[in-house]
Image 1 (spheres, one colour):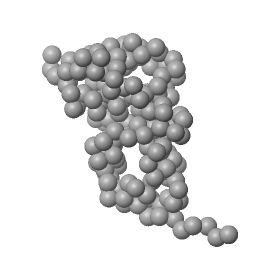
Image 2 (cartoon, helix red, strand yellow):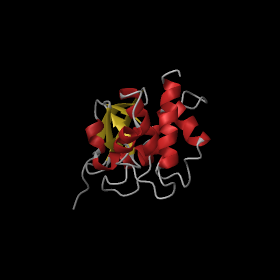
Image 3 (cartoon, helix red, strand yellow):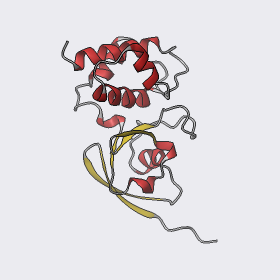
Image 4 (tube, one colour):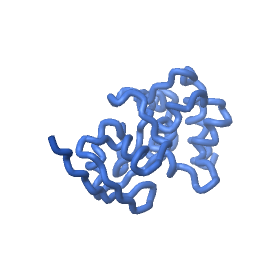
Amino acid sequence: MSNPKKIHVSTTVNGEPCEFLCEPGQVLSNALRNNLDMTGTKEGCSTGDCGACSVMLDGALVCSCLVLAAEAEGRTIETVEGVADGNALHPIQQKLLEHAALQCGICTPGIVVAAKSLLERHPDPSEEEVRYYLAGNLCRCTGYDKIIRAVLDAGTVMRGE
């Protein structure tokens, strides 16, 4: 049995043009980690249930374990590595630290990407809206309250309050 040919993918990752080769059935989370050495994106479940692998694909929040790497051709990807501005943390990252909303770190990249997406779309969400938007991101350590408080606090910073 012969091996299938690798697929050449040209995409943009965190604002930078990027090219890689992938297997036909390789998922985006795997390509980000193994082909591009972008290990911030975590894969927790491989079924789209935990949100640890959340990235932005053409402005839409997706579980990268459910997207084939080849589907990234010509598209724009934003990962957790692109959230900070150099050494300056994004407000969501800073507030997660300040609120001690981080523990083991597996869920953190997906929560950061999802929360940033929420606050860019809806800069003044209610607690209920934050909980709803982050419902696809599972955390086994924190109990969520500190995460929710951090996201609400980051929203005030992003709004300039």
